[in-house]
Amino acid sequence: MDYTVMHRQSVLFPVEFWEQEARKIDWFEFPQKIHSKDSYELDRWFEGGKLNTSYLALDRHVEAGRGSQPALIWDSPVTENQKVYTYTELRDAVALFAGGLRNLGVELGDRIIIYMPMVPEAIVAMLACARIGAVHSVVFGGFAAHELAIRINDARPKLILCASGGKEIQKIIPYKPIVDAAIQEAYFKPDHCVVLQRDFVSCEMKEEYDVDWHELLAAATPSPYVPVDAWHPLYILYTSGTTGQPKGIVRDNGGHAVALNSSMEYVYNVQAGDVYWAASDIGWVVGHSYIVYGPLIRGCTTILYEGKPIKTPDAANFWRLMEKYKVNVFFTAPTAIRAIRKEDPEGEGVKGRDLSALKYLFLAGERTDVATYEWVSNLLQKPVIDHWWQTESGWPMLANMAGVGLIPIKPGSPTRPVFGFDIRILDAFGHEVANGEEGAVAIQLPLPPGCLPGLWNDNERFIKSYLSDYPGFYTSGDGGYKDDQGYFFITGRIDDVINVAGHRLSTSEMEEVLAGHTAVAECAVVGCNDELKGQVPIGFVVLKHANDANEETIALELMQRIRDTIGALASLKKVYFLERLPKTRSGKILRKIIRCIVDDVAFQPPSTIEDITVLDEIRWTVGRGGN
Ligand code: COA
Ligand code: AMP
Image (cartoon, rainbow, N blue to C red; front, side, top):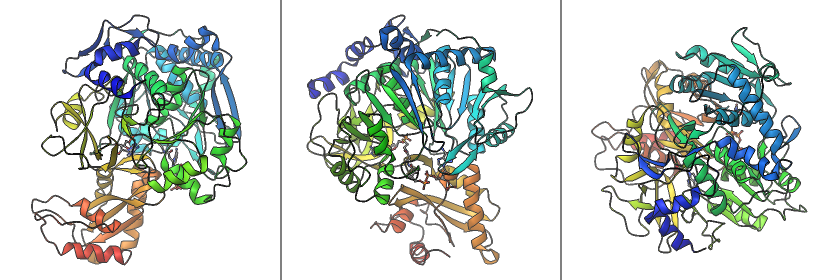
C-alpha cells in the first residue's frame, strides 16, 4: 500500500475513496449519495444509507460464526472481578437491555444519559441505545453534579442510567447522590433513573422514579435492532470548549461506522480476532471509539479496565494484563506511562513477562514528550506510536499508520495525516506557513466521515467555533508545525482549553466558578506544566477587599468550589493572590504571560500591555510560593 498515493486519493477524490471504504461494512441499504450537504450547508456523508451500529458491532459477528469468541473482557482490579462476554452473550445482554429501555418508553431519537463507572453494563447500555436508535450521552464519572446538570439541560434525556457507585483505587465514590443532586439542579427532568446496584455501595431508591437495573431486565424481552439512517445521531459527547458551556459533539451512525472500521485497518492494523485494549474511560472519546465501537465493529476482543495505571494494585498491572490476555494493540495516554515510570523507573514490572503478542503501543490525548517515548520504547522494544486526535474528530487525524506500513518514528511527532485529512498549518491570515514555522493546525473541508457533523442543537456555535476562522477549513484549536520531511508536531492548544492527565478542561469554566465566590473581584486560570499530568490548573485571584481577607481560607474555599462544581479531576494545584492581573490596554487578560512566568519560559511582553510592573508582582508572588 502506497501512503502517498492513497492519501492523495483520499483528499482529492474523497467520494471515490469513501465509497470504497463504505463497502467494507454491512448496510441494510447502501447510501444513495456518498457526500452531500445538509440544510446548514454542512458536509454530510452517506445520505440515504441505512444501518445499525449495534448490529455491526455484535449480531453481524455472531451471524458470521464468531459467536463464541470473547467480545468483551472486563477486568476490575479495584473490585477484584473479571468477566468475559462472548459475542453471543454480549449481543443477548444488549438485546435484553434494549427491551428494558423499550419498556420504559424509549423511542428512536430519545436521548439517554449514561453516568457510570467502567462496568460492562455501561457498554451494554451504549450498544442497547444504538440498537433501538436512541442517542446516548455518556458523562465521565469524575464530573460533579453541576456538570451533569448542564448536560441534562442540553441533552434533555428521557432516562439517566447510573450505578450506585464506583471505586477510585481504595476510595468508594457514591454516584447516585451526584445524580440526584444533578436532577434536582437541572430544569429538565428525565422520566426515570435506572440504577445498577453494586455490592460494595448501595443507594437509596426513590419510589416510582428510580428503576432497579435487574428488575428492568427481569421484566424485559429482547429487542430487535432497528435500521437507522446514516445521518441519525448515534451519540452526543460533551467536551470542554472555551466557554463555561460544554460543546455537545454529535456523532452520526453511518460516517462513524465507516471511519472507525477504516481506522482499525489503516491506523491500528488489527483484524477480527485480535485483542485490543484502550486503557481509557468510556466517558471520553477514546473510550467510545476504541473501547467500544472500533474494536467491536472490527470483530476484536476489547478490554474494559476498571483500574488505574498504578496502585491497582501496582505499576505492573498494565503489563500483567497484557500478558494475561495476549493483547495485540495497547492504547493509553502518555500521563499513564509517566505515572508507571515514576513508580517503577527500571521497568521491573515488564521483566520476565511474555509480551510477544503485543504489536504496538499507541499514545494519545496529549503530547508525548521525548523522555516518556524513549523510556517506554526502550522498555518494550515495540513501536510506540504517538497519534493526534480530538473528541471532535472521533478518530485519529495524524498518525504513523501501522496498517499502511510504519515509517521511521520521530519522537515528539504524531507523524503524518491519516487518510481523509488534509491538514495545513496556517498563519493568522489563513495562509499556509513555511515548513518549520508554527501556526494554527487546520483541516481543509470536507472533514472525512466520522468527524462531528455539528453540535447538538447548536450548529451556529459549530460554525462560529470551528469553521469561521479560516473559510474552507476546520480549526482544531491546536498549534503546531510541519518539518521538511512532512512530519507534523503539535505544540499545544492555542485557546483556553487545557489538558490535565489526558483530560480536556476549560479554564474559562474554572474562572466562572472562582468568580462566583463573593470575595473574588477578578481571576485567571492557566494550565502550567506538570511532570506527571502534563498540565495542571493554577488560579490567580484578585480579591475585592484584599486587606481584611484570610487568603489561606479563601484559597481552600476556591479549591473546594472547583472540586464540587466541576469535579476532583479539575482540582487547582495552587491559588495565588495578586493586587491586579496583567492586561492589555483594552482589558484582555494576558494568560499566556502568566503561564510563561510560572513555567519559567522566556517571553516578550506585548507592546499593548497596560502596566508592565505587574509582571514583577507575579514573579515575586510565584517565586515565594504564594501569599
Ligand atoms: N470518578 C470519580 N473521581 C475520579 C474519577 C472518576 N472516574 N477519575 C478521577 N477522579 C478523581 C480522583 O479520585 C482524584 O480525586 P482526589 O483528588 O480526591 O484524590 C482526582 O479525580 C484526580 O484524579 P486523577 O486525574 O486520576 O489523578 P491521580 O493523581 O489520582 O492519578 C494518574 C494520576 C496519572 C495515575 C491518572 O491521572 C491517570 O490514570 N491518568 C490517565 C488518564 C487517561 O487515561 N486519560 C486518557 C483519556 S484518553
Ligand atoms: P480530547 O478532545 O479530550 O481528546 O482532547 C483533544 C486535545 O488533546 C487535542 O486538541 C490536543 O490538544 C490534545 N492531544 C490529543 N492527542 C495529542 C497528541 N498526540 N499530541 C499532542 N496533543 C494531543
